[in-house]
Length: 246
Image (cartoon, rainbow, N blue to C red; front, side):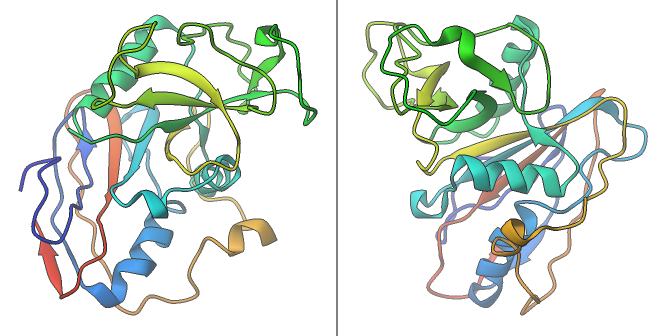
């Protein structure tokens, strides 16, 4: 099926290229859990000859399988990247096009913006306290109306709620919102211009996210098209029977 088209057992699509260029993967129920954890991080994303920065968009159909800000941060680190920093209006629009290519349903995406410090800020003026986790100094922001709301909401998501009624700031699509860091979401990784994306050594916190051994090997075939490099990782809902996704 095409990117974003769901089959009888859910959806699984991985793409490399501008907005198309799909591999063929087969997945059985026994290997589903391994696939979710293994391919969420720890692989090479920027291939030889591709333009950087590179991106990985990770979307979970099953909301119960989505992950916290800290887990998403570590998954990106395993690839040698970070949660995405969005440094300009042009980059914001590029990320939007990548997500639109998924034809995904509701589900926000973690980005790499986070309020400095762990303390609850009871004021309503915390905009200047946010920083990018990759060290970017960019001051570009794309907050939804009346956001950030401060308080205990320290980490930042990009809205993706296509079925939600519009709010005071319009549709909840691609603007940013501060959220509690333990909320489970999809996420976006970014890989830098100046170094290869080889996976760093795993630390104890990451270990809980990565399997010890696969029950079944999974092959990845990649295609790179166009100048911009993006990888989609769409995790299917669990299957009752063995499934093949093409």
